Amino acid sequence: MAQETAAGRRSGVARWWALGWISVTQLMMVVDGTVMNIAVPSAQHDLGLSDVQRQWVITVYVLAFGSLLLLGGRVSDVIGRRRALLIGLAGFTLASIAGGLAVSAEMLIAARAAQGIFGALATPSALALLSVTFPEGADRVKAFGVFGTIMGAGSGIGVLLGGALTDSWGWRWALLINAPIALAAGSGLLLSLAADARGRGRIDMLGGVLSAAGLTALTLGLTAAESSGWGSPLTISLLASGAVILAAFVVRQCTAAQPLMPLSLFAERLRSAAFTAMLAWGVAILPAFLFLSVYLQQLAGLSPLLTGLGFLPYTAAILITVRLVRPALRRVTPRVFLAAGLTLLAAGLVVLTQLGPDMSYWTHVLPIFVLLGLGTGCVQPAANSAATHRAGRVSGVAGAVASTSQQVGSSLGLALLGTIAATTTAASLTGTTPLDLHAATLAGYQAAALTGAVILTIAALGVFLLAGRPEIDSPKETP
Image (cartoon, rainbow, N blue to C red; front, side, top):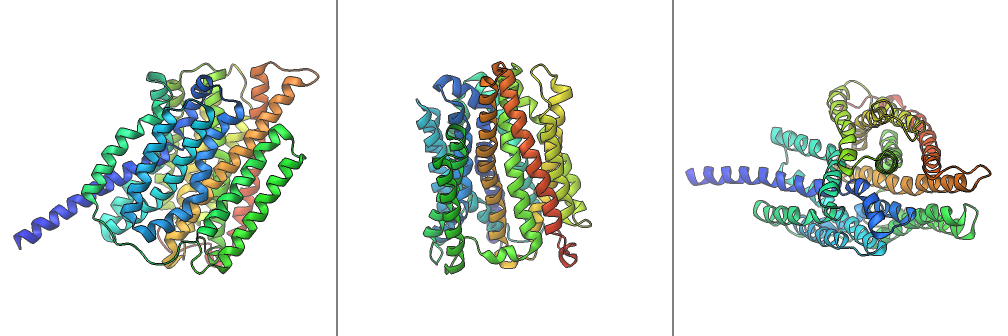
């Protein structure tokens, strides 16, 4: 009996260690979605990146990550979750090292794509292992609370870490720092997690290829508009190809025996509204982060470290808002927070359109970060709750689709708003009364931010109406 009790205590301790190492692993994936926002201006100067290549350093990571997330989850179910997590972690680390040692734009962009691919394998595995390690009870609530708080702070940690490392050791260490962290995390995972059995079933590789190819074609089409124009044959063919391929993906999900994204998920209007809100959120946040990072460093003249510190109010606003929204979701329908959050995000982008070359951080930039943080704090918990509302046994898939919507929105938003910013800047430099470079750059950011604000305003109204059926307007489950 004493031996069984001691074994139980060891098992209990091991799973909390597992929570810690799973959180570290997943935090590394989340941080790398934003860490290069601060480091990329320095990388651009060092490697001679064009503005389009600078944008792709950010875009390619979220594109690869988002388009392969559903496939990664299915692969982890079949090959075993611990095995998938360790493979994803190893591949992510090697890609980080390659990116940190990059000698050209092409090498850096390829490394970032590889990071996204392996991150898409590791992330679903981490979430599944956490669910299995803490199957029920108060410990499960505590574990997911700790994990959610760490992930919620991930974007802020990313920009702060990127600023500190770039300022102290150079932009390369924003990527190379992953190596020692991953080595420690991998060792900890091996010691704290027991090996799990392989699963059964087939992997819908065709569906995975179609989704990745379709989203890549759309993103390339939006980016090609910068150099070729919106009406060029190249732009039109890429956008049309992307639409056709994604239509084929939808057909495949209707016919596949084990689809990556069961279309029945979209039958629930509240859940569809949650997916739409996450997509719209992604369209806004990463482009705004990139614009503000470039503004603070290249126009306002702040160091990378001060730029990273400048992003902290965003994280603080998220943490405060989430603590208020989560209990309120027991009494207020999620659609209110989804629509309000998107409206706050739109307001933040409207304020961004007013930025000038010599404006104070405290009066003009800080309100943007606060509004973006408040909006995120409303959207994220409400969307996560609504995405799994009445999902039953497919709750995990529903959560994965919500995460995929967010990443896809980020990649498409970066491509669309980045292209609008670049074309507006070019037009401002060559117009009948050409502006100087800083003023032209700001004109591009203002046009892109205004477009983003319009998209978010339309999305806020659409989400509110889509999720408005009385019978699902007040979900009974606790988020």
